[in-house]
Length: 197
Ligand SMILES: O=C(O)CCC(=O)C(=O)O
Ligand SMILES: [Fe+2]
Image (cartoon, rainbow, N blue to C red; front, side, top):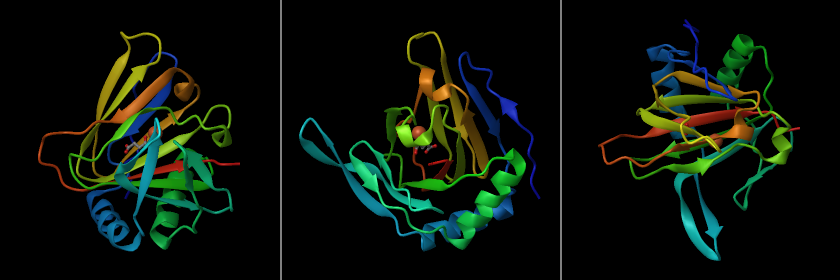
């Protein structure tokens, strides 16, 4: 059963909503375990100022079209959705009434894995990108900050089975990150469903 009660974060120049228990605990446990085992998690490398570093997390990319996805000099080749990813995709689509084409999956192995400040604003995501972000496993803190107004910030603890939806002009005006943490934390899977035309 899905408890789709939604909280809008009411951020200036943004549209970000959080659904804490989008999937119930049994579904969330099942998806976490299955996705951990069935996804072919990849280590990618990013090049900054001519130096190559391993990305501080593992990733995989899925799409129902043949559109690849490029960000930070990494080209992600589209692979077909797995059965569980399709199930998750359909649940989100039904609730939100939006169709997604693609999913970038992230595996944070421990508190040392992270995702630096960025916006999901690649051209292929269109003018106002819609990103539906699902979390399974360990809780991590998601930070948001306004690009120009440094009084505007938000932090949200992304719980097991939750959905975070970013849309409208969010990516024009805000950056987001998952910082490293010194706390003992287990693995976390994040799925970001996107529309890539
Ligand atoms: O792990 C998360 O919650 C955020 C992932 C993210 O921002 C991205 O993949 O673009
Ligand atoms: Fe992002």
